[in-house]
Image (cartoon, rainbow, N blue to C red; front, side, top):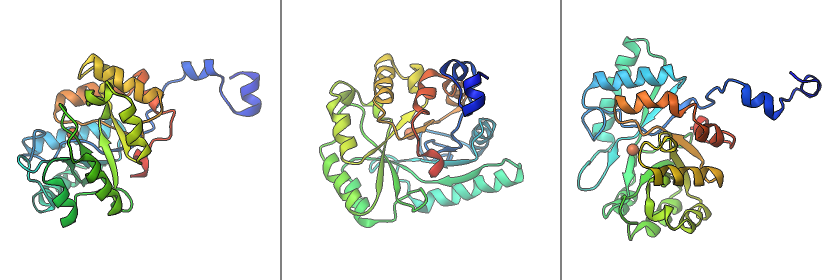
Length: 252
Ligand SMILES: [Fe+2]
């Protein structure tokens, strides 16, 4: 430690760069671990293996988010909570120190506005008002603006999953800023910065991180391959950079 550091208790930039980076995130909130309900885990043993992986990465709480799509994945509290409870039971039996919650990743589609009106959404966060939403990869849905408006009027706090993966925004970056100006929270996928999805997605991820537009990070883990890549992602330059901002993960 330098003379300056000893007096002021602060590290110089040089000392910081040589220090071992410790992941400050203990809450993981985007994954597909409820078995048999979407394109994530098929069997409970896979769910348990992935949860052991999260515990090994230092996570103390995992909020998993099965897809909800009006035509394809008609998940709701009714089928998700009993499966969550089966997984919780196994976590206790196997002494895996993870607090396990279930919410959802909602696709903004034709049926989404009705879900808002019906209420009873799979939400999370300290007030139960955070909601994870996703968009189609090819084009922005025509009802996005009205859905966001209705969510916010109803008191929800929408988090947009992996904004870097929507290349129609990456190619028109003002759109990112417009969404942020509306109070939409952005969640970066941890694997995006590694180039796992594509180079344009990695570039968009770095743009969002550099512009400090990211509020939370998530793994979007569907299967073991994602888990195997997470240690590398948690030591990547992109992750270290995004952790310079105050992320909301640990607040959830
Ligand atoms: Fe996802």
